[in-house]
Length: 111
Length: 113
Image 1 (cartoon, rainbow over the protein chains, first blue to last red):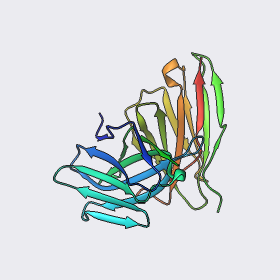
Image 2 (cartoon, rainbow over the protein chains, first blue to last red):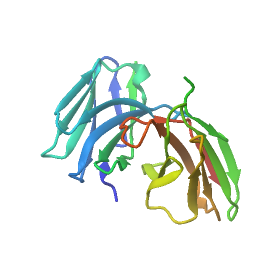
Image 3 (tube, rainbow over the protein chains, first blue to last red):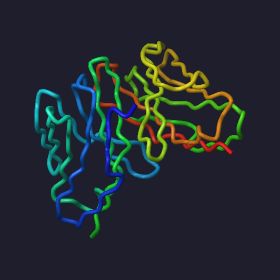
């Protein structure tokens, strides 16, 4: 069951522009959301998170927005840099500490 | 502080064989989770261990099993390998199950022929 969905398998943006990665979820019991970045041959690394009691969290160039009514979250990267090219996974955790991941979106930032 | 280590990094097995993968968590971390990553499926949760006890198990057949040792190191075993078991197996550690952030190892790339 795909409780966390990333419907765009890939995204390509120009360096300096904004990258927007989207994620939808179906389980209303999720109370914490995370984004991970994964480079080839490496494990995912934690990027940014947001609690369900917030609608925005910002960390440098990275901002995560949460729309609970739409069960949708997005990751904004501004400005995008070539080093941001990676696969981004959206993840959600429920109050039983069960974590679910999306299928990932491959971001390519072109110089 | 050393990160999560997984051995081996690459493995080739044939159908019907069994395989054991190892994970050493970050020092001080007591919770270890295992995930399977396949193209298009993202990361799928296999199981989570804490204090040598399996806390959670994902929707995988009984051929997939695991254990955790007193030093928090964990192993997962897959018996009677199938072609569809070819995947990247990732281990993640956290201080305890209540920790939201997990730290992943580099993974073990398993190829079943």
